[in-house]
Length: 270
Image (cartoon, rainbow, N blue to C red; front, side):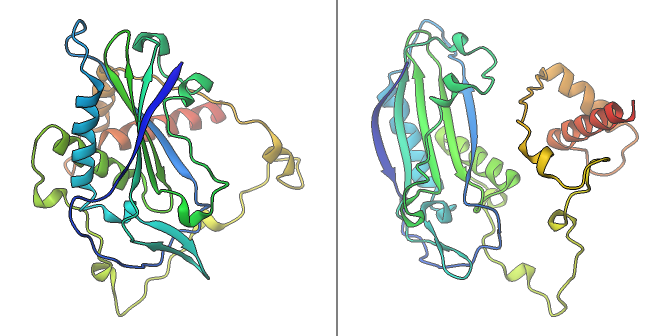
């Protein structure tokens, strides 16, 4: 259903620093997968895919000047290291014969996986891109989607979102402000007094009542659930969350996360 038309290696449009910083992450070098879907503004007018690819490729090369670690590669010595060697990111150009509406709510399944670039984890880690992008146009209906696989060792949710938003700004022909630029220096985190934190995330999870270990729970199949929220629902949640809040307004991410957490807590309470 989805055909890969061509592939490109995109490098920063300007020279970037050649650094070798250590990564503080201990997670396995996997990638987070995301899909961004764009419906056509004019349903009867289909944008030629070369025009779209050229725009996305050129703007990607520009934003990578500021996010240059994404163009590097990982290597493992005693710790994970990010070699900022500007080897580039993988950009795929693809086309789907399906209409955009055929994918429904884009709930994760085997069909949706075709819209996301596949990471070959059998390759040596030094050859594996930290960022892979697939641009897929829906030939029968117009519109397109951007499938992204980005390394969990390099970014978290916030930095990933900043990168995507900044890339979108450049793709629209906009310019970046100073506050849009990533801060890659660790100098601001330096301190004569090293803080000490109780990292609960590294501790063993509590056992389920009646169980002696976590083997049984760990072997259970994970169930996928999709929570679909309309803009009106999100606005209602944000309004409720920020009632009486005199400080910084809660973000959409904070609001939805808290809502889900409260629902889960209420479920177990009942």
